[in-house]
Length: 543
Image 1: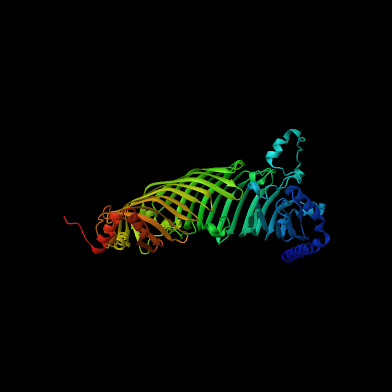
Image 2: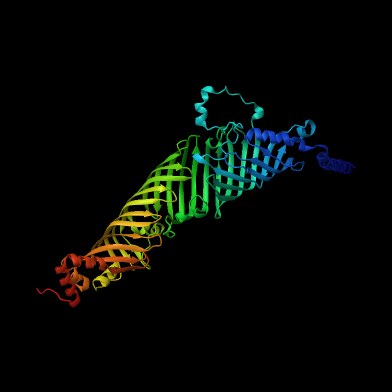
């Protein structure tokens, strides 16, 4: 009997709950709260806010709003800064039902689209969020007018935005610049969780997104307390992980620069509002640095730390180690933000690095070995300056190679058979190679080339490699034996033979520099004519 009575009571309670769920949305007109919510959001964001229809959802424990829109800073755009499909707000139901008061516990923004725009001075359109409408003056201007300013008015608690927890679900972030709004990079699948939302307390948060090109970005940290003057200058501490970000599809570098690669990054970012510190390790596969280059055949890792002055927009590298295989080079220098461009002034220094460990990076600089060849043994030393915009770098400085073998390609055969009628074997033994290089988007310039080949002699000259890998080198070979063959006879008095290297880096072509040869004949007719006939008829001096 008691059992049946208990079932009846439970059924009555359940029926009452169902009736309450069905009736309360009809009794309580939650749209009456819409002006209040819009006003509160506008006061706290400093932007016009529009909200569609409100719906009471007791099962979800709160109110749902359709078609959310937050205006942009008018100095950046007339389009919305944020728009979303819906906003679900969890509220205390008892105060809502009995006193018509609204106490927000949590909020969930669904399918939002957020438009971030970077303007002049590297100031973003979200920087003025929370500022008093009509008074978003830069900090420097406010400090100049401080003497004439009215005494500050203390904020009341009603002016402070406070939400227990906030979620952003399935969002998109569009990043662009005011100078080039059509160049947008889109981050999809954006998920954000934050708690203790307010201007006076630190805000723990997690963030994840799919980057352009199919990579992944994750952040975990603490933001704030938020600055009402400039949210971008709020304190921040976070860890970041980037996986498989395609550099060429992010939009942060010009496609015309040729810079490309797949980036992984793990590190920390910390800002106190005036100085931004980064510390991490970036690993890039298939790196390419110039248009004429191809993907590097081995990964490159940069272990670095920097300090960046947010006001001056200038930074310095406090630690930089560039690693490839088992070898490393040191990077130092500084960088400066100018509008949408980062200008760098860096130095790269590596001494006696194993050449076999770095040869896989040569294609990234537009340097390709002849087809089927490879370098074995030896060392490479470099002391290079890296200057210019990050997407149009110019690399200059001396490069020295010592005691290596170019296996699978005989430079001696190419030179000797073309110029001197001899065969130099199947490989190239390089005793030393030095040159002053200039690597830029418009190609490679090699000056003061000096190449010592035991099979041939000493070769000097200058030349270029075009963005399409075309070679144009004017060289002079001082042969070990300058008495054989046509040109050997022509220049046997000096043993010097001018020649050209053309074709491409993968298929070089060696040929006599006939223009220079004939010029030498005309300036020295006696030796030239004698040498010519000596070469033609194969005559040799009698001992």
